[in-house]
Length: 365
Image (cartoon, rainbow, N blue to C red; front, side, top):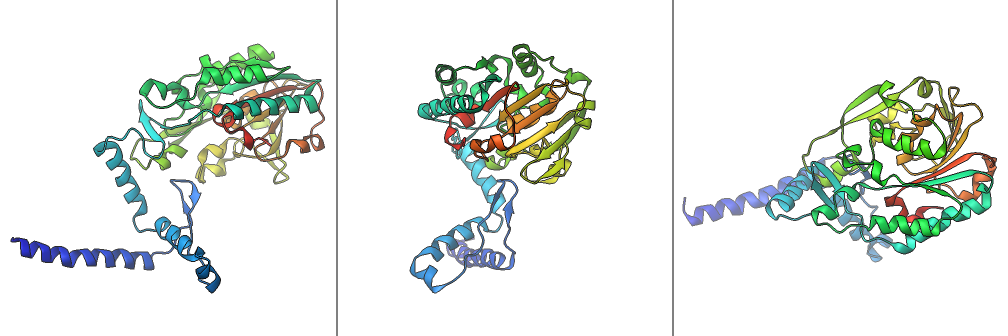
């Protein structure tokens, strides 16, 4: 085949290819949600004279076409493979791979935010918790086990803990750094595995005065495949995880009241297994305020757990130690509202936050 013929074929096929993509774009209904990225996709903007004059229409239309491009997911995967395998990039949009796990870089460390987080705990103590037994712990994110060791920029985790310890007053610090390993976290997600929390529970129990439950006696309910939040963000064809939620007589007997919906719920919201984030099976995921009543918990014992998403999976394993557990997420509610729901005095209180939250502490209200 001579050069002239090749050029002619290219000249014919290229416009046909463009026309094909245009036709597919026009005929394919817009997708509302990207399940892999766990976000809403931009929809077609309304065409008005005002939006054109202000330049808003074309900006929004450009975003809409990028989100609704035909075979978008396939092209995302091709792009990620190209960047990692051919261009030998160490990360793609802050996502990197190590030891079979997917990570997202958290850097730099915002020292002012760390101090602000500690001061927020102090404020809550002064307002409500002077007559309580108050503890706090820091959950290291996955980068603690892989970033610096593999040449990626990393938080100074020891300094982070030191800043918190210097700032926080009147609370007992429970160190979890040394009782966690990378294997305790999901390969495709940011969170820890519920079935791997025995060392964490034993450490908390030794400090707070409760007996850690025997997780080996719990029933393992397996959900597979489980694709965590980093799987979709990476756009790479990596393996899946197996999500396990543990049931015990205490988890089956407990009742959960959700103050956002004003409805009674179960410890495990099984309908969330079919949602965008199956990890929400643990207490329904991110909820501002919940009250768990455990008939099999120690009578009269009450815990107030100030938590982020990590707290959802550990709380069910505390239902034998406490008759009542308050789940408080001040990322989603103003802490000034708490006295309307909780009568403070005599409870155990645990602030349990990941380094991801403490490094972005302005989200705490």
